[in-house]
Length: 291
Length: 253
Image (cartoon, rainbow over all chains, first blue to last red; front, side, top):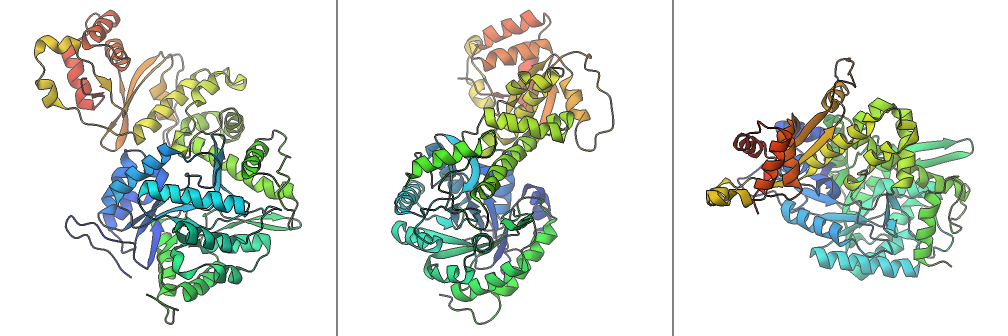
């Protein structure tokens, strides 16, 4: 495990190829007081657009740990113009925090100025692909840095989608030059909900483009005639998702891996325990390639 | 095949469909019908926005009860759809909405509680610029009257006909069971931040009148006139000193 020690005024550098945890407000003080060994922290960018106590805590923790920014509100897949105010806020936060990675989602959340604040599914068509590639390019140009785009979890598909999701992501990465964030839980949730093969999905993801992995827990909506998995980030990582993660690491090599937990947030010790499980898998021998 | 824009418009309209039955025709029937699949998104949207309101308005929620708050939130979300990708911007209109919400009419103090909680929320997330005393020192005394100060972004004023602070305190987690006398009289409050904590200060009529006037762009001379109208014994020097120390004011323009 690559625990990070603060060294003078220099902030820790890039996100290391080990496990980290999502930073939650209820853990600020414990992290600052105990300085537990952990690889890195990730935050939801929008939670730090203000200039109050949250940013104060983030900057204090940034002095000790590498930090990545994960956006949920840019609405990259929307047909509205990109929100310049949102981009300016993100750019200012990037300048202040100097994150190792900056990521967003393959989704949309707004149209006609109404924001649903959810990660909504795109149809995988040539039109949506062209739009998404252009918007990622516009955002990257504005921010002056690479974005990682995360595969979504989804509960519905569209009749007129023509491109498999993994190929859609591969083409976004190729055409825009962005990186990818592979959320293994999302692959599992979507594969189960839509009945596709998660292993085949992994094999269609371009290895070189993936720079980060997410892991989280899902919950289950039970109906008399079957289940729908919901990506709630509210529990431990499921055994099937750990298995898929191991397969992903074998194919992709060691990558920064985040434990996400956003609702019913547990004690810090639980997150650190999940983090160590991910580290143990990352440290297993015989991973494909580590450049 | 619809354009992406048409699909997105249809999707949003279906989320807000009052009957909760509509869904875009492009949704593919999978293991389940389109209505059930789409309902997952409708639920997620309303749950996350209700959660965002509950996070900003915990006292209102405690006062009206969780069940009623969910009903209230549903009505509010339909009337005031979020207009920003930053969830912290959502919910500014709740006080006004409560004031016009028929089921809340017997509890007119609720709107003021919401106003206080929104002020708390904004003050918590705002930048708190330091007051530049050196710059003030460079101003010749004869020009003081023409100075303008601004309320800090991390400070807000609230005036209410109800004992807001007592209501707020009695509804904090772990507060003792107390009864608040709603007829105890009104309050003028400054909501501000000291270091990392949001705090409240009761203001007397003169202090409130001064800050209120400065916030509205009055010069120091005009503002102190209004403060003296509100309280004949108003002490400008003492009040300014105190408010600068609290961080309520930002610099003269």
